[in-house]
Image 1: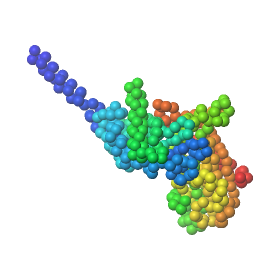
Image 2: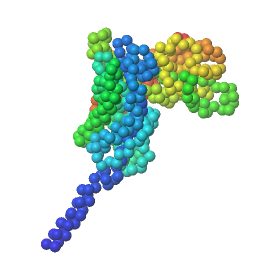
Image 3: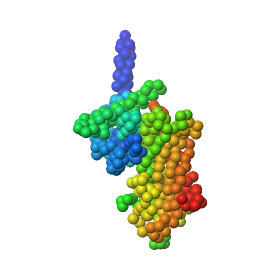
Image 4: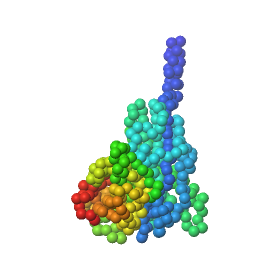
Length: 209
Length: 205
């Protein structure tokens, strides 16, 4: 009997810590997140279109947009509030949101980690680009290009996934008498929705495996 | 245009070459992205309306995947001096702001405020995604090369479209887009290499 109690106690002792030690906790997983740079716009009208940031450059025929409506600081705040680690089904990961965007050259050409961390369990989520796409026929969307990579002990990523997510925008460009605050709020919602859509694809992929 | 970023290239220039004021090659990226999808209807307004959403997305994706820094990086990863048959030691000057497309043909003098006796310009004029029913998907690019002497007069000019097929772009929904985005840079470079091979072989345009 005493032996059985000891066995049970020993089993409990080995079970409890194991249950508490999820891979994230045990290895101190980190998720580094970078916001995107300035919003780009691309417009396709009947007589004008194709020029990147046509409105910003003051080209005729390009509907004007508010100056820098979704700056990097605001993006960083939105990303932090959205808890991307939870969206990616890794709620225990320690979230580190970097305030400054990375330049596209760094994002696109760095084979290794973008962050200075040496954590054995490390992930990074980068907003590579945000494009405000307007089309006279098919409407207006906010398109966001995300890149997600995970690293273990190896210098090369063990997993990578990049893609666009897009969400409809209806209040920008602002119509006469339009509410700028509401339009910006809608744009911010679209940005977070894009993040959720992107994360959702990754989670579905992970579950399939 | 005044605020261009002087770049590298002549890092290998010897002091003697530097004293002789080396040649300059000024490079500008494109600002305009185009996408045309044609099917069996042979183009026109109906086709444009049907493919409007696809083309709008493609343009946005091109604007990102081949943004100004990426175009310049792609070109600078090549040996521009050799490809364009320029004198060894030519300094490459990188302009981050694209040339206004409608001024490309209008302006016939130097775009940069350089007084170098040997001055050249390379402009990416257009980046164009095309999907045709029979020929498939391709990335087409329009490049313009100009050679000036010691003055403001163009001594040689060559402008040409080029294109190569795409297998991966545009990326599919819910698939990793990295290979498709990288393919654009690879094909962009290939287009340039083919264009550059014709520079100074073809009569000035």
